Image (cartoon, rainbow, N blue to C red; front, side):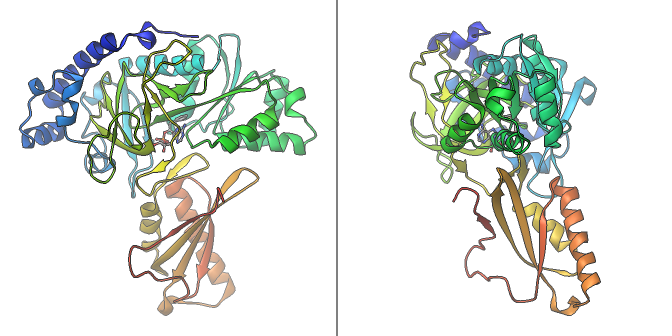
Length: 434
Ligand code: DLL
């Protein structure tokens, strides 16, 4: 179902709306965010130089590093007293990336997610189990309010405790599941291990999946497990931009419709930073044009994709993005959680016994991601007393869990046993999709 008239605007109507909103966002950040004002001054730009969408490429980019330098509220365009919610996602090192919402931002977020849920087939009659982690992550509360807006009932089961998820699915007559694609597969698998047939023993007919890449192989596997009548779509978002609600697939599965009345997408060459022609693959850059608290301008998402501008059979006219094929930085998504190798390095270097050499090995078993952290011990602090090693391993694992929010397997390696590199170190071996 199409919820808002903006989803079917003509190109010229959309461009006019975007241009007006872009200009007022630029004016707002110029007046309220010192770091943006400095960057614009350095580029000899004033808000009057950005009157239409065509002017957007004059503006400097914003990166995760800008958020880190301005931690926690330095890029906010409103006073703290105007905030109604704060979320956070992983930063590249120690501190998280902080995002905030005013009352109006929460309203827009709800509307954007409601559109995407409706696009994916959700209705007011659905009973929706949200198997995303509730908390600082934007996924659960974003979908929660969006689906509630449609009039659906929410089962806020959060992530984990899969056997309990099965009980809710069955006993509460759940019709819609929200999860990462890998957790959607895992739930079906545990269901089968517990003697259920997900196709016939449950009433789930709609799946809204997001927060990590969903390959076509995963989609086919999800269909195989949940049944041919299972309508599953993926949706995309990112905390810095809003959370979920940036884009989503409709029933024609030809890319994810971007809510372009709130976000202006561009594709750039990740190395040169130059805009690429329509249809080419590159890095997605997004400008938020309605956010009050954190209106990021030309934010480099680091997600690699391409844009489609041709007509979609669903009737929506909004630009669509292809599935995300990779990243232009080293961020890893592990069980839906963003992990940067830099965070791990910082933890390891803070532990006396650990040296600077480490390796990360990612695997997927039973549709669940695992990460092994191999770290080399320093010769001078080496011990072969088993309880000491066990204690050290536990210390490393606990510290990593506190920073990353996920459990890891820690392997302590003897000095000089991990590979050395002459060029750029290759720390990550990702065996998940091989
Ligand atoms: O994952 C927001 C979200 C929650 C989107 C629930 C959809 C559903 P972050 O934790 O900040 O926010 O992670 C953002 O996740 O830059 C992508 O790399 C990745 N990502 C999100 N959706 C998709 C998707 C949420 N559909 C980062 N396909 C993004 C591939 C995705 N990657």
